[in-house]
Image (cartoon, rainbow, N blue to C red; front, side, top):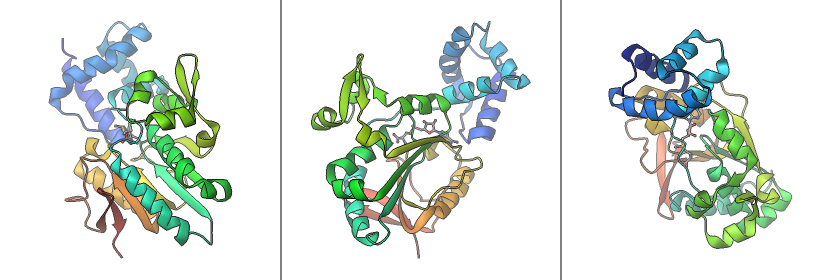
Length: 273
Ligand SMILES: C[S@@+](CC[C@H](N)C(=O)[O-])C[C@H]1O[C@@H](n2cnc3c(N)ncnc32)[C@H](O)[C@@H]1O
């Protein structure tokens, strides 16, 4: 089974233009796997008809659903673990550096279903209770996809999602079982604000960020998009802010204005002074 070439080419170009996500010619199978559920759910006769309707542009929600379905939303609690150990050290430092202003801003910049942001919230509750109790702490969690944001806002996770990366003690402490799923506690939930934000679109005004997690999203963008994105991220950060990328992502060949640091076996970047 193949998607007709004009519709395939249209989707590739739309995805790149609207979201920065690049797929190559070999991704026919991906388009089929991701479009079939939409075609079935909306009772549309074929993938080509679906993509023609997106092209006509009469239903903006259809375009959003199609583009969102083409993205990879893979995530897990405490993904890769070491960045969260490094984050713990950074927060201990920030507790001293920001003692006068008593506020911290974290940004999970491609948050998917929320596990990254909730991991930061658990880490704060677990190790920095005093800050959580008396400082203004914000964890902004943004994504392009309304579909994953709706799930993130719900704050409930399946048994399988819980089994990926979440230590049993934290499951016990910060979740309760709710109708076959696991619901995150209010003390974590209240720290996180979910918002729609397209990393290659216009951004709402963001507070200056102390720590940015921009993980496992740049790898879907071309080099030019990565270059302009990290420049914008630098402007959204405090001068001494820290930026975490995904395990397979790097600043090498993207922007030499960043200094790489390693703490607790994890790398992060700060803008060179
Ligand atoms: C693989 S997930 C990464 C989730 C999390 N950061 C992690 O590392 O576990 C990538 C996320 O990036 C989002 N994304 C892709 N393109 C985007 C864009 N242009 N703006 C905002 N989010 C985007 C997708 O919707 C997806 O949820």
